[in-house]
Image 1 (cartoon, rainbow, N blue to C red):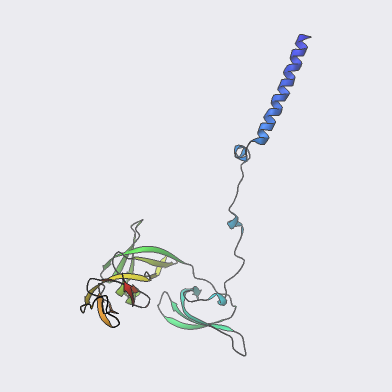
Image 2 (spheres, rainbow, N blue to C red):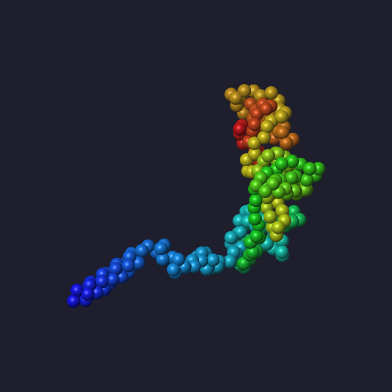
Length: 236
């Protein structure tokens, strides 16, 4: 009888232990069960595709689009709604590759293709003959632009200046200067003091560019220039 009671007690204790183990598994956080049941959670973004297409109504200044296999930049645009006939968008755009500027009209709402243009920040390091050399400060890889590609923008380009290079199909097609550039005045008539009101004078900057500055600006002053217009903004 004692043996039977001992056997019954052991069985009872085994059931309690089993139940306790089951409860422990149920309370175990999901991270503990991950090894047993691995889940594959693909990014939700990859499950969806673009639900809309770009149209001529999306055109704005600075927009990049691809026309006839070439990248173009919108310089000007105007939405026109004539009294008769369909509405359209009149544009003036520049070909990144050839530099040619043309006027082109798009029917309002017509589908357009955005040019796949990437941008990378590079530092202008030096000029090698007729080429301007830009460097990636991470990889130290050099990229070069011809003087004809830089054009009049070299008036505001200074060594050590960070610029944005534009790439299309793996080739450099253009670059952007900082909107505001800081340059030193190297030649100017003597300043008239900070209290001088009105009046401007020409001043030569370290890059050779000549701009009109207030009469109180003197040689050695750093000035801020808007690279888009070439206009003096303020003393630095």
